[in-house]
Image (cartoon, rainbow over all chains, first blue to last red; front, side, top):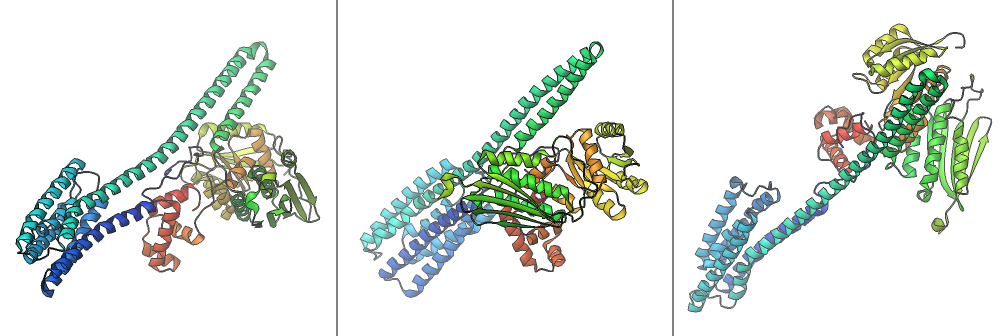
Amino acid sequence: MVGVTSETAHEPRSLPVESTSRGVRVTWWYTASAIVFFELILVLTWTATLVQGGLRTGPALALMVGGVIWCASTLPILLAYRHRSGEPAAVQWRTVLLPVLTSVAYGVLAFSLSGLWLLLVVPLAQALQLLDWPRTIRMRMVLGVTALLVCLWVLDANAVVAGSVDIASGYFPVGFISAALPVMTVLSLWWWDVLIALDRARVSEARLAATQERLSVATDVHDLQGHHLQVIALQLELTERLLRSDPDAALEQLRAARVSVDEARQGTRDLATRFRSVPLRDELANARDLLRAAGIAAETVVGADAHGAPASVFGPVIRETTTNVLRHGGGRHSTLRLERVGELWRYEISNDTDAAPASPTPAPLPSREGTGLDGLARRAEEVGGAVEIVRGETEFTVIVTVPVAEDTAR
Amino acid sequence: MTDAKIRVLIADDEGMIRSALAALLRLEGDIDVIAECSDGEQAVAEAERLLPDICLLDLEMPGLDGVEVAERLRRTISARCVIVTRHARPGVLRRALAAGVAGFLPKSREAGEVAAVIRQVAAGARYIDPEIAADALSDERCPLTNRELDVLRLGQHGETTAQIARALSLAPGTVRNHISIVLTKLHVDTRQQAVLMARERGWI
C-alpha cells in the first residue's frame, strides 16, 4: 500500500493486515506469567516442606530469596524466547549465560541446604528448557531431563527412607512438582508456538486474500482493455480502408472508435471503483469538507438513525447535489441534512444563490450537465421516492425523499 | 470576453497530450493558446510573464504539481486555474479547492468539453467534474484528529519529537502520545509509514 504512485488506479480496498495483534500479546503475558508462577510455587513448596522438616529460619529465608532471584533470572530467557528470530541456532549466549549461572548457583545453594539431589538439578533443568532449542532436541531434552529428575527423586527417596532428611510427609508433592516442572514449561511454550503459527497463518491468509483480489482485478482490466483495443484497432483499420473511397463512412468509423475509447475508459473506471463505498455519514462529511474548502460555509445535520438510509440511493444523490452546489459557486452557505421523518428518509441540501442573477449565465456543457437533476428524479422514482426542487428568492433547495423499506421499518 | 479571445496557458509534462490538446483548443475560434509548458516551474514563470486568462494545469508534473502552481499564481496574478488529471488521488480536490482552483476535470474529457469548461471558468463560474466529485465524496474518512495530523505534518521530514513539540508548543510526552495513537489508528509500526500513508491518502 505504501509508495503507490499517482500512475496507479484506485487500489481495491484490501483486507487490513495487522501484524501480531493485541490478543496475541495478552496470550504471551499469560503464558510467561504462568511459567514464572509455576517456578514460584515450586520454590514455596520446597521451602515449606523443608521448614516442616526442621529447616531453621535463616537457611529457609536464603532458600526463599534465592528462589525468587532464580525466578527473576528466568525472565530474560523468556523474553529472548518471545523475540527469537526464528533461527533455531541463534541462541543468544550473552543474554542466557547469566540466568544459567544463577540457576546453577541456586541449585548448589538448595542442595547444600537440603541435601536433596533433585534440588541441585531442577533450577538448571528449568532454565535449559526455556532456551530456544530446535523442536526435536527440545523433545529429547525434556524426556531426558524428566527421566533424570525421576531418578534423582528415587535417589532422594532412599535418603528420606534412610532418615537423613526428615521430610517424609511432604516428599511426594515436592518430587512431583519438581519432576513435572520441565514438562509443564515445555507444554506452555509449545502452546505459545502453536498460537504464533496460527497468528502467522491468519496474517498471511489476509495478505493472500488481498493479493488474490488484486490479481483478479488485474485480470479483469486486462480482459477489458484487450477487448476494447481490439475493437478500436479494427475500427481504425476500416477507417484507413474507407478513407479514400467513402470519407463519410470513414468518419462514421472514426466516431465509433472514439466511443469505444470512452467505453474502455468508463469500464476501467467502474472496475477500479467497484470496491469503493463509504457510509453515508462519511460521504456527507466529505461533502462538507469539500464545500468548506471551496469557501462555502457548509453544515451537515445527520439524524441519529440515518445510518439505515439506503446508500445506493442517497450516495449518488449526495454526489450529484454537492457537485451542483460546488459548480454554481457564488453561494456562501450550504446545509446538508439527512434524517428520518416518519416513514420517509429525507435528504435536503440548500444553498444561497447570488441575489443578482448569475451575470453571464454559464453555458451548459453539452452532454453531462442538465441530466443531473432528471437523473436524480428517475433514480428516486425507481425506489418509490420523489425529488422536490424549491427555487426561493435567495435560496435553492433540493429535497429527496425515499420511503423507509419494509424490512428496516421496525 | 466575447470579442477578445480567451488566452490560455497549458502545462503538461506529457508532450503528446499537451500538443494535441493545444492543437484541438486552437481550433476553437475563441481560444488562443499562448504558451505550452512542460513543468510546474516553467508554468509559473510563463504565466507571470504572459498573464494568461486561464491556466490549464496538469496535476501530475515533476517539481511543482498543478495545485502548487495554482497556489503560487493566486498570489501573483489574476489568472484562473483549471486542473486536469488522469487520476485524482484522494484529498486532491479538497486541496485544489482550498488553493482557489476554478476548475477540475479528468484528462479523458474531449477537447470540446475542455473548451466549454475554459469558457465557463473564464466567465467567472466554477466547474468540478462529477466523476472527480464522486471520487472525492467516496473517500475514506481520515480517522485522525487535527492535532494528530499536525503532529504528522510537522514531523514528515524526519523532525524529532522535541522539534515537533516545540513547533506545536506541546510537551514531548504529549507528542509521543499523539504519535502512538496515530500508529494504532493507522495500523502501522513507524511514524514514517504513517506519514507515507497520510500523504498517499491526501490527509496531509
